[in-house]
Length: 160
Image 1 (spheres, rainbow, N blue to C red):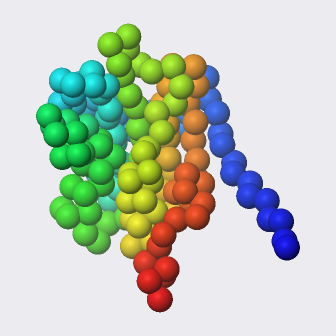
Image 2 (cartoon, rainbow, N blue to C red):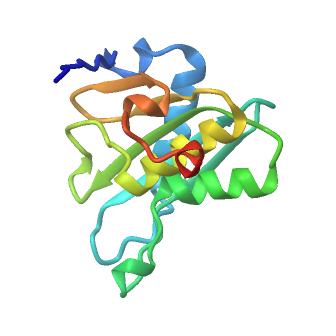
Image 3 (spheres, rainbow, N blue to C red):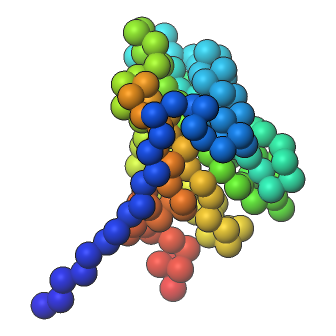
């Protein structure tokens, strides 16, 4: 038997103004687009903003449906739009935020398992890790690369 230990570096910030300017801008866009979420059932509004290698910012918000399985998370709305509209442009960073009826959620908004898998696949597709910025009222967490969110991800190489 072997024991292996995983280490994940998480950078934590207390306020938006502590972030580098490009991260601040991205996070503020995510907060803005969260207001566009269609969340009549959960009242949980999520916004995502992507910074592409070409400097464009792509946004997305969660879209619910009465049949909950037919809804889509903000991260995947933004990621799929970016990948289909700019298929040759890598994603440099993603910011994710969430609001409930009380405003910005306390703890950092973290992508669900399906969104984590899409982030991993997008990194694999472009052979570049992305910066992941997760927003919360108490703190903002930043990770370098989706493997830090999903360390045992199913990757295209798993099909070999």
